[in-house]
Image (cartoon, rainbow, N blue to C red; front, side):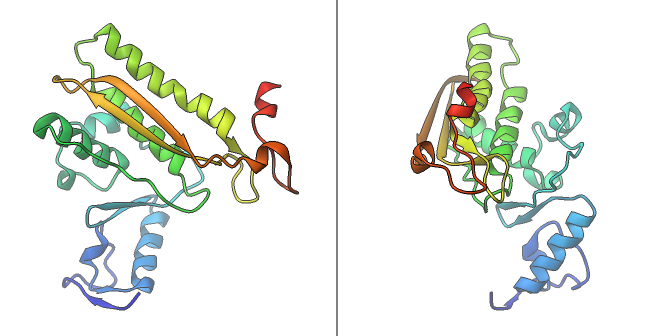
Length: 211
């Protein structure tokens, strides 16, 4: 990454948005992410993109109090967090009637599956304030689908004990009240060779789940 001219933030200052670094290059980015990680701030923005560093431990930053903290708040009003991203996407749908897309990408073991769960948890928590039974059924079904998908599509690898061996797309359709009334799950690129043969240090899936 070649150095780029950034804003006038001091080089040793830890920023919540990487575009505010005085010099935008790989060492500066890594140093900033490392300092935030050491302070247990695993989320950092780079413009409209949220960077997450997997802490490989349980952090108390996803409970109901954090959900309340991010509900109906603009993304710039709160510190970087996956709930802030989910709220921004949801508000875009509810307030402006526009489609929103959240693309989660990263290395194996970076926390993509857990991030997807957290986004769905947030959406489930802030919708259906009227307690409609049909909406609750949709939300519960979408949330519980993760367990099924992981059982039949995840396996242990050398780098990750619960690695997704397929891709998936969750599509949530909202009604005029902003409540999810329909959902679709599309899976693709299942690692089929793992079904019929096992490599050293790796597990096959499906059969262990059936047992």
